Length: 110
Length: 111
Image (cartoon, rainbow over all chains, first blue to last red; front, side):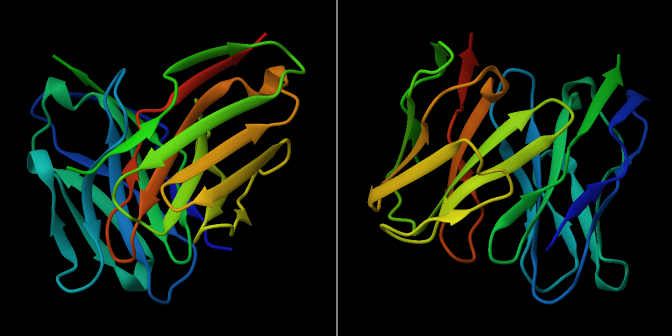
């Protein structure tokens, strides 16, 4: 069965640092890929998605992700983080159902 | 605007009670999902449904059942609530080739 692994459970960065959160899924074929964010006390929001086409996907709030098919990866990046990016981030993959990773807690120091 | 609503934001129940969590969507989507979210475990799929009266087990269906009598409504049922079912429950929906939309969640505490 399809699975998703997020490499980091907890990441702490200073403001203006660059961010990369890893995400790998277990097997290929046609997959749709997502990153969601959950700010403290709020519900899940979609950051970005990949269905097909350009493997570099731009999302909201300056986030982007790159789909690398050969590596089964969909890493999330942001060149310069802000304190307001403190949240939990979930990678997800969909084939016949949507499978989520366990999440990465990102803490940005002001 | 897309809407997924859940019947309660917070719920406290006693061990052994039967619990109903309701989810309603107004987007005419075929697919509906129930997840539970626990710290360090992410979102785990309990049940999902592709169509009315259809249901499929997710990764952790034990102790739960579901009902989908109408397209817009997907109910999660805890037949006999237990303390290990204390969690945040999230309902979600999507139509093919769209992103998934989440409800606000129900935080269930079983005492």
